[in-house]
Length: 113
Length: 114
Image (cartoon, rainbow over all chains, first blue to last red; front, side, top):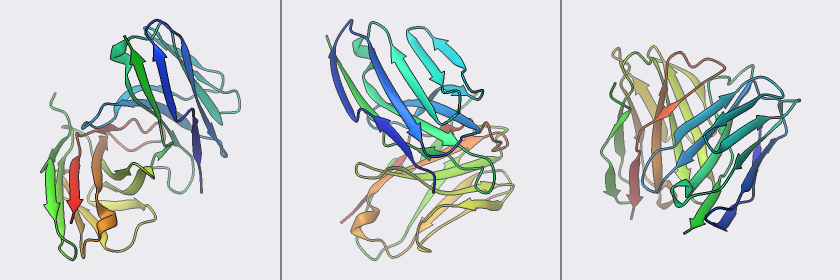
């Protein structure tokens, strides 16, 4: 059974601060995705990373996939209240069951104005 | 392009009843996956359908079942409801369900079992 661990589970910061969220797995993933979910809504895809060592940027968000493709991080620069939400990482792995995503339990981020 | 739609958005049932949830994927998407989200367990994979065939199934009891129609719309059914089935049920669609597996989620159906 593939497991994804996210940390921290909760994060409350002031507007303008930087933060990093981590996602670690016990298995090598063929791809990894980050989603953001707001209360009462479904997760919204932010980015997909596929290649070990890959770095992708989305405005103030920077996503990194570990060289061994077993971990990933999301860094937010100068957080804003609009960044508040539940951040989820999800991995897809090769072989049987490759059509499913395994999700971490998420990081609940609160950005205080 | 319209997103993934799910109906109903909210549902209240009592223990022992059964429920059917519906999902319409993004036009052109042939893969539909279902997830259960609870505060304690997070998002857990239920099953995935592609071209009317279930390709993968998560670790849930047989009370949870699903199907997909020729137009890619999908339904999931939960029989003999238990209190622990209270959750947000999310449907996600993707083009092929490939290893890159970018999935697009609907808003979910909030099921409350009393």
